[in-house]
Length: 187
Image (cartoon, rainbow, N blue to C red; front, side):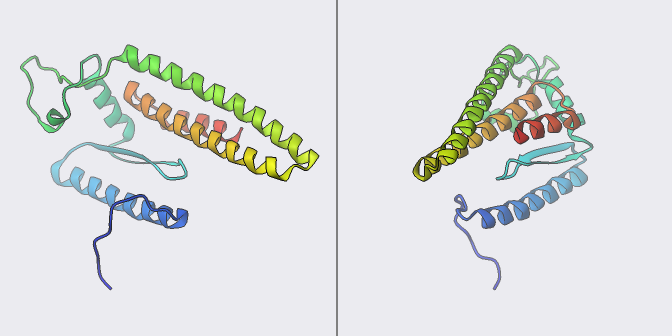
């Protein structure tokens, strides 16, 4: 049948979305690998699946590239997005991109607190669902299940933001971060 142009929009069917994600992730990682080989560049890509599972590709390693990025960009104000691809500098010997670590730290703490609040609310809702099930209220179960689903989605989103904040703050040992995220998901 051949290739055809597709409209770029969210894939609605979850199975099709997962297949599309897997194929495009593979293509993205292949292109990143080619870039690192052809240009001798250091590359790191972190992407989260629709199921919020993290995947990464890096040359030489995610930790190495992330550390280099964070060291070069610490304590400097961000420039406009037009300047991100330029290799020019202003003569001071330092890269002018970066993030205010105090602000990032503050945002990180707020997000962690939101996650804890959401987890507590989720536990309370789980308890309420169990009580309703024991009483036999089918209509209430549907409403509570929807609420529970939305809370889980919010927690997953906050965990994703937390992970990205960690990547932007300091070098992250993925072996130490993933068990924490998995531990939260199992609660």
